[in-house]
Length: 308
Image (tube, rainbow, N blue to C red; front, side, top):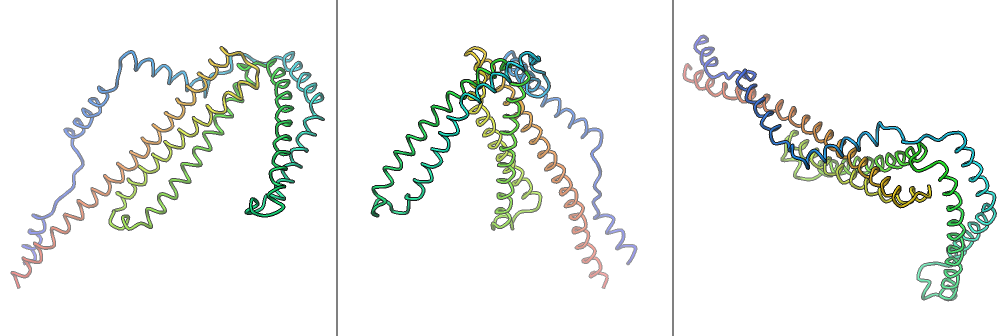
């Protein structure tokens, strides 16, 4: 009976074998067929060239011009003279604005429109605040114009301007990453608390969470590019650059930002897809082996019962 039982188990046992040469050849054929769908036309070459140029300009290429000692001395002299000429008036306007805002804050209570004497004090102090704000902006514009003339001695395309543009981009990039990471954490947390997660396996939950994370990072990176492009005009204006130079600088920075973001998203998507594929394959192999074990037991039980 023991011999017959072992023979029955041997007949019903399923052994998992790794894929052979034919399967590997088919997978390599799939890879080659996928590469055949990659566009190679003139438009694709243009986009590829812009992508490589954007990566190089944002990450590796040095600035076209370097700041020498004479330009740095002129910049220091002009910036110091701008500070001396506008420091007193700028400080006075800023202090007046702070006093006006504090005075408005003291009387701007809840339901001030229906309470006396606040319904008369708030409009008057709002006018005072608006006048102080207008005076502060006028003095700030004069000061910024003088500082822009000083920064023009360095040049927008100098290492000073390029470094400032890259710093602005990486700040926007980091803010997009923080948004995406926080949003992905809360999405996963609420997905665990939801009732749908109870009916899913671990692999299914990871796939859904990775998809949510990729969408969140895509939104965060788009926001980062938009914020960076929104800040670029003020940065260009701070160097008192011309329209042609400023437009070309804006285009180069925008192309570089888009290239970096697209590369980051492609790498992130590839890493997530590889992780999900390995997890799904491992879970499939485990289920296959467990399935073989489950199919052994009924045959053994039926044969053992028949022998009894």
